[in-house]
Length: 141
Image (cartoon, rainbow, N blue to C red; front, side, top):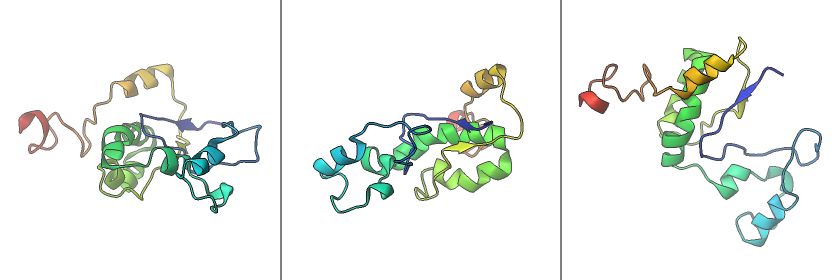
């Protein structure tokens, strides 16, 4: 309770519980289908199956153009210290430093907060393209 998740066109779910139908829904053939098509090794344990790594492996573009939007949103609600931990991932430089699937902010998120976050364009972050924070990128360049 009180957790927030976000997704932006890059699969973010990695491993998930295969034995908790009360809390985790998935297609019954999500693993066997991948094995059948050679995307996940036949001998690999089902419990180690990663949805994202199999069906939509993260790339520079996936991190920089999709997950960066999640990073910006999570950073807004979790604070600068949280955002700093994952900036290298959001920039597409360290694809192994993946963000958690969800976060638990200190304060409740209102509908107006969601509207505000949907209008986020990385202002004030290293990804700011307005040219106001970093003169060598974006409109000011």
